[in-house]
Length: 444
View 1 (tube, helix red, strand yellow):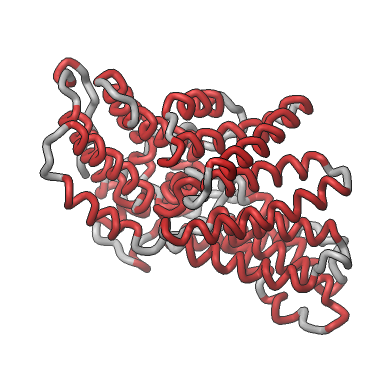
View 2 (tube, one colour; view 1 turned 90 degrees about the vertical axis):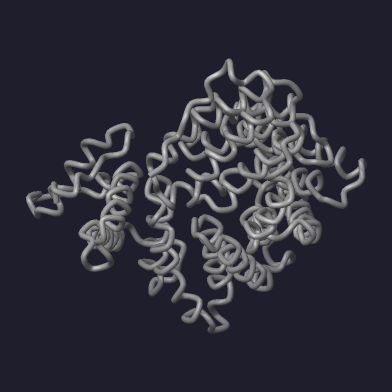
């Protein structure tokens, strides 16, 4: 394989993972552990797989594709030996336990979400008996939550599957029978509608459904004195109300009030992870067209970027939002900051060339940008780009730069092209940019 000159991505611990991959391919390793196959391993493997494909190795000829399948099967088999779920009927306890184990490990290995779904989905057909009604509601709720975590190109299809399972679960978990289980499913349903990728004209209806679900869950949590749950529901409900395209000033202020209530609670109780969530949601609101305040958004994004709870793709999503915020601020200084931020931050993304990482970053942008993951979003962006790309005015070039950043979210697999075009538009919009170095991102 050395004749193909495969290169290793510039990632922490990548060389060690490259050595592991070569040892696996040559069958030289006597023992491996599931912990060996972390996020970096899959990024390096995907990098090699893409290079091999470009070198003409398709399907069964691509050794890295075969290795990926073998590792996935190994992880699946390893998960079968995990502890059973004590809260599930005996005949289903191993299936549920395996599912939960893989969902837990998916934080480090996102590819396990699809395997977890595969482990739990057969239970939908096996739990139709009346005496399994309560357990079926649990299965549907957990399955819906898993579909929300599924990072796939057809993101809208995955979220709609989640909604279908959660809405059926609600019929099996009525409010009067068990308010807390009902609230759990309502909270998940609120998240699903908040994350549903639909066109902008369809967003108000989805956001209203999200707000209603969060409101129901929040009131139940309050009555049960489960205050952290109440605060989380308040963040979701506030976000949905404030983002609604139809929202009047009253709805926006009500949304901010709910988020502020949650922020004070998290701050008082020392919940730092949840404080980061609030900061990201506030940044999203201040970047929404109806209530645009880019400097306020940058302040919240700066706070969030210091969090110890963020993954790499969350940091990348924050950087993209910082770029969009800078593009809303007049003057060349902000344009230079936008260009430098985009250039510096995207180098890691482009080097990894991992489709899964790119989709994770797009999803991590949050509920303010999910319309860019909707079907036909890239087609609509192309139409907008074609209308202004020949306009050399500063305002048009700024808008063009924003559209190419949006394209980076809508079609993350073509990131290299969109980054270079966004940078070119920023240079064209900047009257003094000849004195600044935006950097370059080479093709290929």
